Structure formats: C-alpha cells, structure tokens
Length: 211
Ligand code: PRP
Image (cartoon, rainbow, N blue to C red; front, top):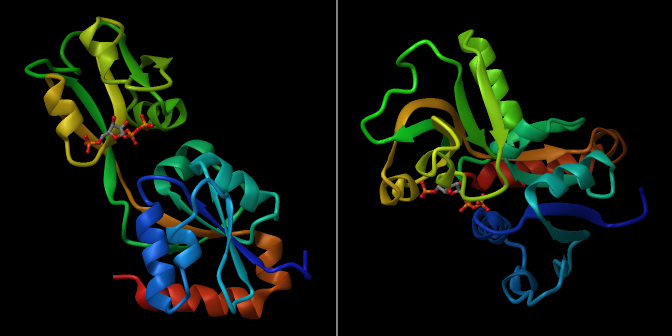
C-alpha cells in the first residue's frame, strides 16, 4: 500500500462535480477528471494522487478495504451502510435531508394500526422509528420510492429530499424531517497511520477550500 499513489475515491453523479471543484480550488489539474469519458481511474498530473470514481456504497467499500485512502461520500450512504473508516470532515456540499413523506393532506401518525414505510434506506428508517418508539413495517424499494404510497404499497416513505420537486410533482409532502445530510470526507484507518503526513496535508488543503 505504501508504494502506490494516494488514491481518492469520489462518488459519481450528484456530488461529483462539487468534489472535483474542491480539487480544482486546491490548485490541482483536474482536466482529466473533467474529460473522463468512461474512464474510472483518473490522474492528477504532477501530483502523487489518483482519483477513482465509484458508486456511493462502493466508495465506502474501497476505503474500508484500504485500496483507496480517502473518499468523498454522502452522509446518507454512511448512515445506511456504516463501516470501518474515519470521518475527517463535513464538506458542506451535497446538502439535503432524509424525510418522512406522505400523500399530500394525509397524516402518517393518525390512527393506531401499524403503518408501512417504503424506502431505499431500511437501516436509517428502522433507526428513526425505533428512536421514536413507533412500530412500523418497512418495505425495501430499489428506486423511485415515491411510487409506493401512490399505488397503495405504503403509508409513507423515508427518502432523500433535496429541492422537494420529486415529492411535489407526485402529490406527496414532507410529514417530518428525519436527518440532515451532507457530503463527508472519509479515510482508511491504516492509511491514516502509514501515510499520516501526506494524508493530513491533503485533508488540510481540502478543509482550506471548503466553503
Ligand atoms: C433522490 C431521491 C428523490 C430525489 C429527491 O433520488 O430518492 O427521488 O433525489 O430530489 P428532489 O427533492 O430535488 O426532487 P436520486 O435522484 O438521487 O436518484 P436515485 O433514485 O438513484 O437515488
């Protein structure tokens, strides 16, 4: 592990652009990252750094296994996935929230029957309702969870809300906020020991450009 470049895993998609922006602000040449095509490992010229692009949960897996030293990933994935790594900074972008949403005009907490919640995040949902002391049935959905209450599968959903547009366009509304979310910088615990100086130098550079 000691001989290869410092490897940073970035989450593809929604928070990728902001993460690349941070590297650019530090002064790194991100031309390769901006013109990546279908490539998954990108070089930062003249630096001992390479960047890997992966899906959020995989960023955690690569960092946990130590094949990537640093990772940029949403707190939503950290909360659902968990794992063995150190969280070093709140990057202050990718801000959104977990919320419990229902069909407009309905009240999730009305009545006494056990309610059904559809979600892509069963662990987050379970933890939330356990803390509230409320018994619910949880149904795991893989995508477009907003559909579940519309077709009668669930009384509510726990999902990510950013602008609120998806809920609005599907006749849903937030019943209550569950947790705020933002992008986080994580590091492999062994890398932090073995490459401490360089890793902390990079972390400080990143912290220095966080808005
Ligand atoms: C998330 C989430 C909502 C949507 C909310 O999905 O599941 O569907 O974003 O955003 P809004 O409040 O701005 O409308 P995402 O687009 O990340 O896709 P996914 O289904 O792959 O998670």
